Image 1: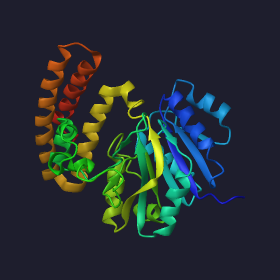
Image 2: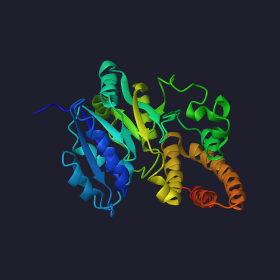
Image 3: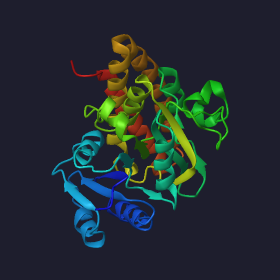
Image 4: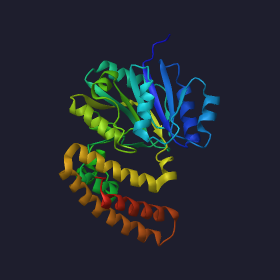
Length: 311
């Protein structure tokens, strides 16, 4: 039996078209190296599993039966993974030729590297930062108020996104986004799997922090490239996603910085979301569904921060 160098874990929830495109991109590179694809379906009702099995019989499909969330879904796939290394891959991505081999080679050539991520392109083939520094309350304030996007090349406002470093020059980073992330098998055995308390968002931030805290490095492999249809799946569940983001952010800060860290986060984010609500509400007066949806999401997210974590 051909040795498996990589297990690719794809968690799907009602994202049939994205999933089929992702699997097609993986099928196109199957000759590059020995890898397996494990699709974990979180209770989809759109025919994802049925059509996926019919068109891509070489992939393994696991039906969770309900929406476990991203972290628990990934862990379910990781339980049956046979590859030396493991990759988390969003269903709204497409793997470009040569990328899987380069990511695996990077881990094999650098034993002190725990996680690697590729160069990320958006749906228009424009590079975007797929790495971030570890979050602070101020970094998340700047993201929420869009100061990080208004001033994308400044260290002060856009440090979270490495705005002070030009695209193509990122290397040793704090974290890479979970849409396309490869973890060394040895490191995974050291730090364990994803924390299932993160239903959606911040699970990869927590994983990267645990990897870095153990002494391993995290790197961008710039000659490996993956295209990401950003937020195509998430946009269909925008308000619920914003609520999940708030809950996971609080979970992360309480886990790593205790109650004082959680208190600081809530104070900064309540202020940020108040600003966002005003800005998006004003924008919605000029028409358009997007500002109204963003205003609704900001109000829902602010309510989660107001309530805090369950005792």
